[in-house]
Image (cartoon, rainbow, N blue to C red):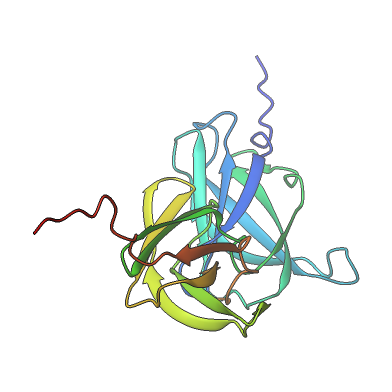
Length: 219
């Protein structure tokens, strides 16, 4: 009886996301998790919208699960990187996975920005949907003066909370506001690369106290 030993299956569904400082996290699927001894992670810099020279980035041992992960720790901000993965087994090295192009960039803009006014305070809240790391949010404000909109200014920096994968949120309370004044707000999400584009802006008018009603008296 002859046995032909072949390389393990090609890794599948390679994806990437921004990690913590200078990190890019790669994840892929292992079709047959018990047939690999490890994985070769290969990397190429961008060369005119296509991969340049491929080089080995690292080697990791197999996980014996259906997914595997690798964290690149020397990623450069705003770089366009190309990645691919090969499986290694007793039969040799597999063909490379499908090539992945990934831009190391800030998060997407936050969404669902809303505000609630109470007395001289406006409470803002928002979310940001991304699989990558979000370190915080920058809140910006502009004030309407004379019918026009004033300059945008940085109001606060808040921390980001991740309630589950891909869902980051935060809030901010802007207090000590002037009555009968219109305030505009927008928010940017931040990671180690930088700030996102701003969210869609909203405005809220701080209303003064209502005039007394049903005033009555007697002598």
